[in-house]
Image 1 (cartoon, rainbow, N blue to C red):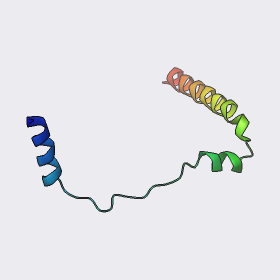
Image 2 (image 1 turned 30 degrees about the vertical axis):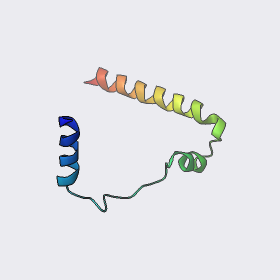
Image 3 (image 1 turned 90 degrees about the horizontal axis):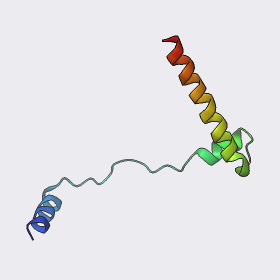
Length: 64
């Protein structure tokens, strides 16, 4: 019961936020369409991008 009382107190005394920001749609599909990638190719593009990023990180580590 003490735990319930603590949560009730927190809820009652915590500041009320009437506006905390905007919800945005996930832009991934729109970006992929803008570069001409079909929905079925998404996994391939993600895998290629991950490989390129990993390769760039390895190159940066070697140069350091």
